[in-house]
Length: 495
View 1: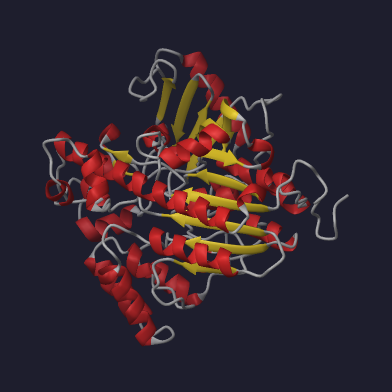
View 2: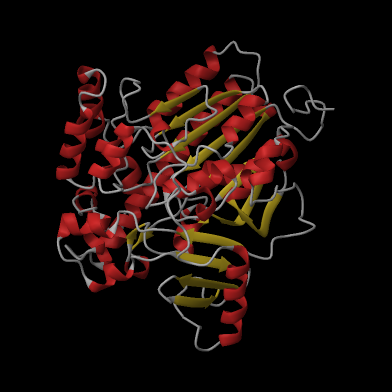
């Protein structure tokens, strides 16, 4: 029987605590025993989902889906409207109302109160701040170039204590330790929190590690493990890492450049995997490991030269939406490897069910379905993804680069994808479409739209059945952003 908070502590299938770790920007194809041995060990002893997919190819909409169980066109957080709806139930709110202590540690400046992600957390720490402060200097970190960073600094410096703000800007832009984008500091803080807490409540812990995100700057000893034999650390780190400038053809990267960048990227994964091992060790030392559901996933993947792209914008290739996912603990321990299709937006209901939390509001709004332990009796036939608006906007790119290449203007569109175990179909609101046979063409190089018109019609109908018509998504007016936030977003070209 559920307690007054909607939790069923007597169920043998439930766990006490839930830890949700996001390897920001980790693509499924780059995770494995060589790069991420801790993740692989968890996969071997827990349940590994080999066909897990994000609902969007970048941080803000993907995390919004992860927190609410809804698609981007439903939760309204995207490049044209960068804020999570305040009338949607979030995963931390569900756990908080069920009596859990809720703590978040974010190292991505999109995942903060400015964009609606603080709801339900007792505490949400910002890894880019040396001094924790309500005044968020994340807009400076997000600046695409020096001009945008200076604009954000002028806008933000006197919002609160200027000395604290200046300290945080200097830390994030100048003094943050080389080779680490907050993972070491975050893991240390979590370990101390676990060791010192005297709260009898179960806890929900969320942590975003951002290291695999551009810029790739792993510690030298990690980089040297993954770079080609004829390349040095200095060779690799001298390569310009500016995805939007690359997309806009301001500079060129050779095949060798991308080979070195992929080495740095894999080294970042290895580094953050070691932080994952430290986090697991902290849970063990605190005596919480055996009672914890431990979930590790990514919010989206990354292009490092694939399909002519660098970064994670403008498309819905599997390189961006196929993500790693492992669930360990409770009924998921010893579950083996599963090949059924699942989505990150399935996790809210999954985590609640595993922890004995019954939240009717979250369940009613969700477009996901709870992932059950063991082999699925009713597997998904398809998964979906959306790219609602370019980020940065075309206008913002024009402000930075002037006239853009024709191909960049083509990216100013909405995209939707439907993927079965056999086919992947992508359609844009400008008439763009592609069809791929996944088993024979996993890299999505061969477009079959002309060769298989019946298949195209069938999958197009499935998209139309699932979503409103393309082009119908509009920025919601129901999100009441702070005036200062509106000004900062406008200053950086988001509004």
